[in-house]
Image 1: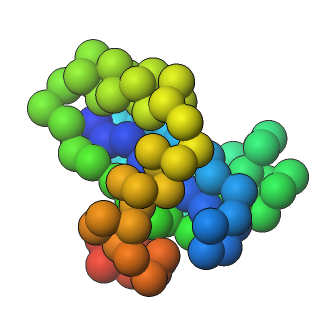
Image 2 (image 1 turned 180 degrees about the horizontal axis):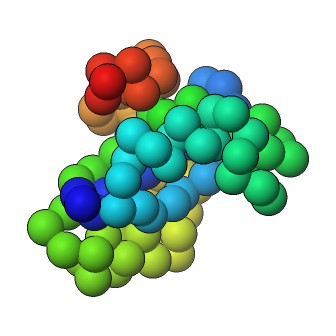
Length: 94
């Protein structure tokens, strides 16, 4: 179990989704295969563009809330700081 927060995008500077999980690889696979019902399935938000690993789930949930409360501009800046091309980071996790 490795707590993590992640940001998915529909495309470069497209629709964003912020989530938290204890198993990043499994959760992103679920999103990519439309097994995570709801927002990401409805809007085609499947590209992993950012993630952070955390020591505890409490820390990860706190960070997720912080990101969700922040502006879209801050999320975009965070993504572009570490992933300026908005590449799909999922293959690198495997």
